[in-house]
Amino acid sequence: MIELKNIHKYYNPGSVNELCLFQNFSLEIPDGDFVAVVGSNGSGKTSLLNIICGTIPIDSGDIVVNGTSIVGKKDFLRHRSIGRVYQDPSKGTCPSMTILENLSLADNKGKPYNLGKGVNKAKIDQYKELLKKLNLGLEDKLYTQVGSLSGGQRQALTLLMATMVPPDLLLLDEHTAALDPGTAEKVLNLTRRIVEEHQLTCLMITHNMQSAIELGNRILMMDSGNIVLDIGGEEKKNMTVEGLLEKFRSGAGKALDNDRILLSD
Image 1 (cartoon, helix red, strand yellow):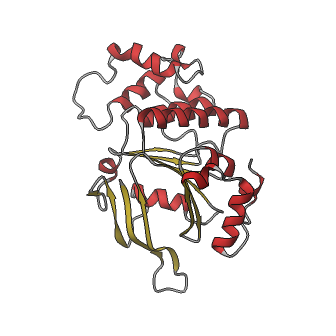
Image 2 (cartoon, rainbow, N blue to C red):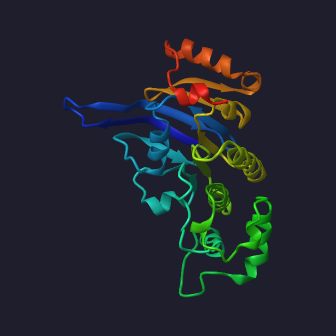
């Protein structure tokens, strides 16, 4: 269970430039939920992930992961239980290291390091099997530097690395936005398979409303730091893009004006 309780965050409080990011914001994500978050630019989607990760410190409130507060914890302690895939395929991997070395680092997440070898060659066959499931031919490129891979290959590898040690919470920050449509579809299918296989709790930010409808079991729509729609169950299964836009107009009292969302299909 992931809980955000009464989160408050202001920029430049008390000044003429005061900006309210979140005010009394609360959210519960039960174990196993796959939640898609949509909304226009500036609605607070990515800021929500940054607050969970600790990149943006909160003014007050609490963030609880499986009964333990993570507020005030150092980044490396938070990330023992949180996996994240960014929009930029260059993030989440070390480009100057090989695929094998990157996988070894991910496989040792949360484990103590010593002066032993960083790469366990006994696991090479295991890594090859994991890469083979990506269907991208990477199982034959273990000694290739990650920086030479395509954006889609790197993003698929990043997703695999983020879930090799199954996290308590997987955060996907528009992880297909920088990919071409064909590659994006492959990565989304991989996302669905990995989340279902590991029964992960997942929070996915997306501008593609069709993807939000097709993936996961719950849709949140945000506007100005607030959740204006929370749709799940049979209602989500029967939802269409047009129906979602109409619900946003009803819930937020205005039309959605973000071209990236309106043009996505």
